Length: 238
Ligand SMILES: Nc1ncnc2c1ncn2[C@@H]1O[C@H](COP(=O)(O)OP(=O)(O)OP(=O)(O)O)[C@@H](O)[C@H]1O
Image (cartoon, rainbow, N blue to C red; front, side, top):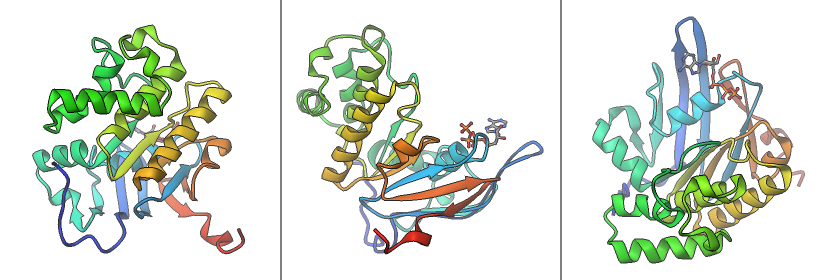
């Protein structure tokens, strides 16, 4: 297993403090703060270009911020080697993006089994786990098709199954329904959040759509590279 099992896991699951990231003259993140606990679903909202995806990429260790820190279960991501961060992404993190995350040469079932195989699961077990997740996401009928032969909604359910099959502790979803019509989008969100709750996975959900954010427990708004929790103002009302 490639998880970071360690004793120092008492605080929040994932915390970012004073993140700064620039692209030339553009400050994509300018002191952003973020925290998420196990099993929590947090929507990251905000205008286009405000820094949502950059925040997600920093939280997932895909990019390294120039300032600030990200701690995952007590481990600072920037203090890890590239190999340790890759291992973390394979073992503890799952990803769902808007487009193109499936390997076109593999069947849908093989796509779902791939992260398990990379994490060391034997072929038979990975295949049976892939089929189980395809049934849960209601796409077992496309198991032998390649991503180019399925609909957008089916492909996105396969992507969700792939993200969840390795039982990640955190799922990073960047506009997971952005390419879908509203009916398919809602079904994908229902299946994603139900499965995440069943497995106690945290979900960092970047979206600009209020109806997608409605599936979250808490909303954070990113504006000009700074993140603000907007749910705390209404905490206790629900
Ligand atoms: N690789 C890059 N090179 C240059 N500038 C970048 C790069 N990535 C992001 N930026 C800039 O950083 C800022 C934040 O971008 P980011 O993608 O995080 O915003 P976002 O809130 O996710 O936007 P959207 O909702 O449109 O996807 C924007 O001004 C963007 O143009």
